[in-house]
Length: 58
Image (tube, rainbow, N blue to C red; front, side, top):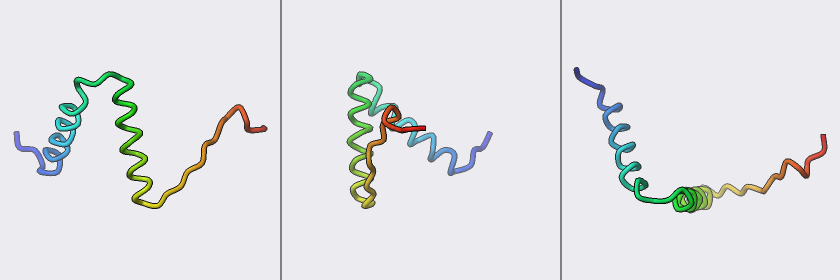
C-alpha cells in the first residue's frame, strides 16, 4: 500500500518525538513541554496571564 508523502512525514515527526521522550519521567516530559511552549510564545510575542478558576466569580 502506498501512503501520501505528507502522512509519512507526520509519522516521522511522531517517531522522532517518541524517541526524544521515551526515557523521560512524566515530570521531565512536562518540564520539557513547558520550556518549548515558553520559547514558542516568547518568539511569537504572545503574552498570557494566569487564570485561576477558583478566583472567578460566576
